Image (tube, rainbow, N blue to C red; front, side, top):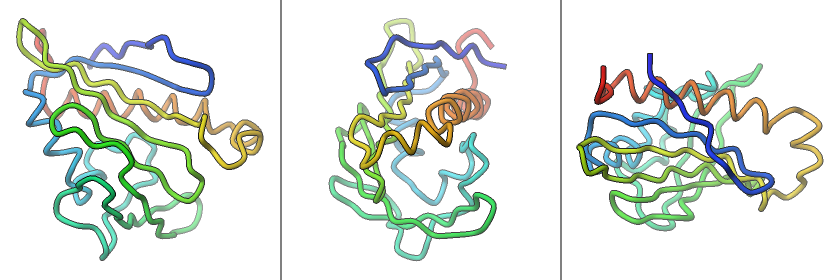
Length: 156
């Protein structure tokens, strides 16, 4: 089990971090491959990449994901932040953002920070009403734990 850290964040941002025993490049390669997102998804909603998903994400790339939240559906995401081995983020039609920041550590390993940023959401009161911030915070913790389980942790 990994040690997920709750990070300070601005209002309307849920942010958590974990340290994994991998290089930023190794972690980024997984995050930039939408066909592998189901491997680490802690929300339980991501099923698989849709037909429109590229093998590797890039700035502005669009990718479909097959999801299930009660009922199955497909949603299209757009990459909105992309700095190789450092930062990747995407959003869908609701305009809230899922973001990953990667930081190489001097002693080895990578600090992976995941954010659910709903400052840009089309209708934040609806997200709050359905409990999306708390649900996403819990999902982030599970995602980071799965990521740490996949790569291992420096002390584990």
